[in-house]
Image (cartoon, rainbow, N blue to C red; front, side):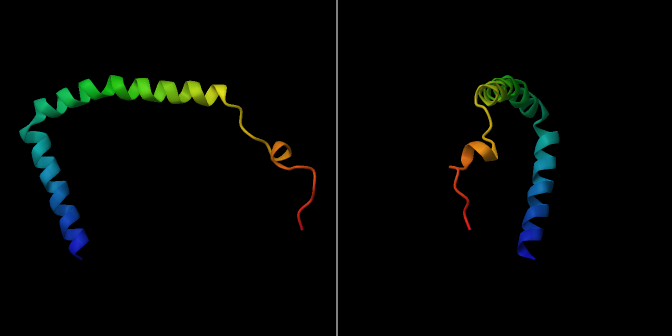
Amino acid sequence: MVHIVLGLFFIALGIWGLFDAYYYVADLVKGGLPLLLILFGLLATLAGFIPPNTKEEESDGRERI
């Protein structure tokens, strides 16, 4: 019960902060979005270079019982 009340309080506090300090939130989003795009781009590029393992490559030829 305490977690629910605390969660609702934090949600209300966040909504109030979003409206009260809208320009600060907008600046944070504008400044953080390019960094997130760079990180996701690097992650996608690395995912393209590393091939996925298949079941045939993982087994060593012996059956496990």
